[in-house]
Image (cartoon, rainbow, N blue to C red; front, side):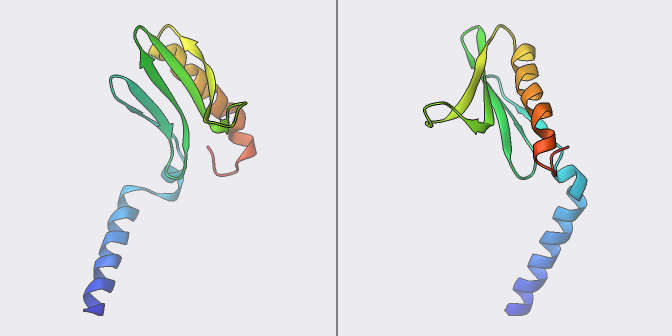
Length: 102
């Protein structure tokens, strides 16, 4: 039984390695739905935007808000593109602070 478990773990690890290299693991990508989009890499959630009616709210997931109750609010934007730009800009400004961010 132990051999089966060990070989299963090895196969799973090999499959994961073929899907994602170390460099890809640290490259953030947007994941989209009709009302929520999130920016994340393989290790961390970097930010997200949420649709509220005709507007999009942007959040920086790398910093807490002033009251310490959630993510830092970046603002309200008229389009998905503008909201994504705001989150992308925060990410670009923080790249130098975390060596694995690219």
